[in-house]
Image 1: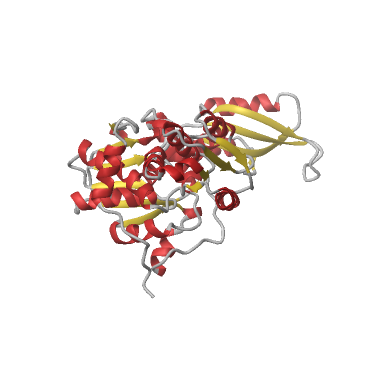
Image 2 (image 1 turned 90 degrees about the horizontal axis):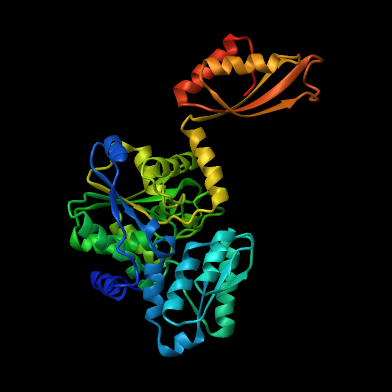
Length: 406
């Protein structure tokens, strides 16, 4: 049986949302990237939704959805489930509209995101270890109390609100040929596709998923939403195990291609955004940049990459940047064995100094039973200048007679 969504979303819906959001959502900046432009061989622009109110595009859809409620529904309040961006969008939108909001967040959700959601006016409840468990708790709360459940992506008003990003892209970069946007449940990609394809059907739209949470490729192959058995990615903003019913049909019909990116590519993209574009972007927001890095020749320019959010936990940022530096060949960890005698470490550091490797951390192991009586194992963390420099460092150590284990 052919899959059929509950209803479609039109350009008029997106235009109506755009009027509703006037004075509420920011018209976020469009910044050019010389580095990415040189890599792709065509102009590349960044649509900076990481600079949106609440730090992501989510305020757009959340406000349109809640503003469309009846007086009776508003009086009952709203409820949502989220690990971060949707939580903050719903909290602020509800506060602006004078509606009571309750947001369920996973136990262990990043403290900055919890604090921001509280500051925007929501009553935060912690439930479950993962968002799926939190989602069930929020739905149960809605059934018990009569509060209106605000879905993060599977509702026409949500999609129409997110589609206003597409209208802004066409206004800010009318010559655009390709739009690259991250996909989780599909609300943002679907909304952008509705707006852009109605006005500029020749513009190519590419969706990007993290390889560890890529539900769209098998769903598109099956012709219906398919749930993944498990999801795992640093990009929590697009870590969704099943496409939404409504956005799926739009993505199927209007999005030209869905590609996947690895964790290494995500971390490298986040690092590039920080260093080259001076943009703080979360891994999900960096996914379009990761796609450009993975296949720069695959995109016709001008290209617009949507940086969907910048709400990254500082601890995750630290780990991701280290991972990104490692993936870019600028952070090298290795273990080696040397004779356990006075001055041995100084000699080793001298070898590293000659090849200009910056030592970040050193640790010794002397009690491993695999070591000889006069041996010690040293673990080194080095800052390097790229893949070629890593090879040079390893070669210098081997030439000096050291046994490099890893």
